[in-house]
Length: 350
Image (cartoon, rainbow, N blue to C red; front, side):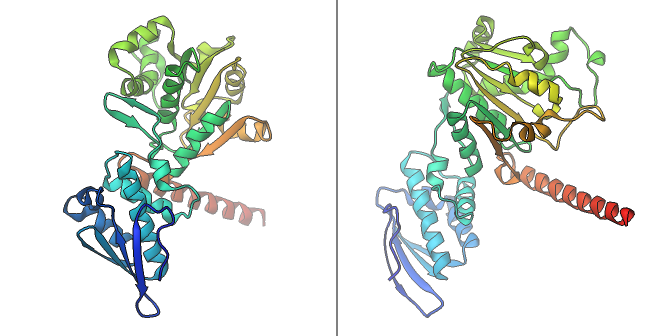
């Protein structure tokens, strides 16, 4: 007899087939819509069959699993997590199924349902939640620490989640204002050649922050909050000489700060404030010979209390799944290049 689901969400019975296989029957509660669980045209069911070395058959609300004991156990846990997510009122998508399976394969202590059901912010019927385990740990770190670093490639949600936490803190009156800042470093273009006033020249660098705000707040309230100074979006240079109290401060694209700029920014921290620094150390646009402040800050601040460094990877990319594959391919290429350079360096020295 195999064990029932540990969480008790699903009832289950089972018996042994031949020595190398387990036959297990899981009973899904009658309150759960089987189409929501299995997906249109059994899309979610097919994904689980491909992900686990187990045969899965459904009859009514009974799901029969047959295969290696470990795989059957994982498949049962996946069903249990999906049922729990449905019970929170969320819909299930193929991406949800994929993330649940990925987290179970990673053998983490956190339940996938707990990760994927954590609501940060809701606006106009849309809810912002972490979508991977590392994203949840990043969000938890923002709650627990005064200064948090989110380091990872594009599409991992490091800035978006930080902004959602900032808006949440503002709405809960934990802070009086939000300050969003970026270094205005050219990536292939020079500010002087862009048309318009200084404000218009800088605007393209800050546009992604405005776009995220429009996802999180009613559009008609944003101009009022900006005019009142409750939300400030400004280049990093505007932070110099200030002491920022009772504020949630986000520094985006921090890989394009120099060590001196990073020090200047971090020392703006005032009483009752929180800082989140985000960036991708593989996308530095600084002039040749200028070190990235984000690359050296962890070595400098190692051991300082109330700071948290959080790394996100290609597995945490929540844009089109091809973006994750592109990031992973570049990481592998960079690793090969570094290995070759190290080998050539050793050969030259010998």
